View 1 (tube, rainbow, N blue to C red):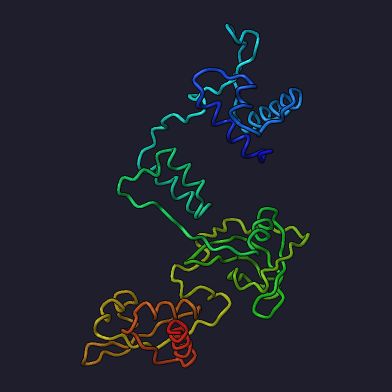
View 2 (cartoon, rainbow, N blue to C red):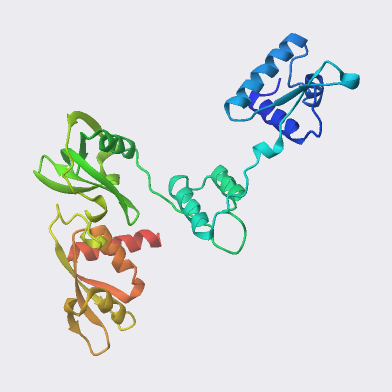
Length: 310
């Protein structure tokens, strides 16, 4: 006997393609071996299949046949009732659908098929929107706590924290939790992927989010300043060669220039709270940037380069 999902799929395909109503005997004959041989068992299985299809929105039409099949019941599915009409979406609306899918179901084949059916995946030379959204086992618990306005507990940086969560924000490829850290008595920002073991306990303690708090503006625009509310803001001295000096000065501002050299290179001071973000910024200049100080930043850049080389 065929798997029921396979049988339902084959039954729907048959009823969609038939040009005239088909009897249960014809259905059983076309779907060889997928329905029981006994009349009562076959009828019972077919009725269950009809109910299953009806539950997912597929209505099977039926009528009493005449002629040489007089008295028998015929079945079919009206195709036009199953097809999605042209929704008349403009380019902006199609792009919005693509973006929504990319953000919520990255890599989903069924989602891509759905976009094709809606006309949002037509091969017209435009690039299909794709997005990779980082995940963490801690996210469901954090989202639940935010929704229920409950405090959470987790280990972070070697310290057990009790935090009143105010908001979650995706920034530069990482999820951040913003909230009131009771152990520090102040607002803090936590990178979710650094929660030890991804373990978050939701406490039975209701909280209040400050009036007017907006998570979109809670984090600094400069990724190198992420975590400035809990880490000391430091400064790195970086040498940028003449090929990228103009770009660096334009990005940082002339007030960050410490020295100009005759060969066209510049030394700049780059404030940072996030070491990861600073290292990523430096590596973005490839061979055109050298960290002069502090030593731990220089060592981290060298370690990353060795890791890539190996």
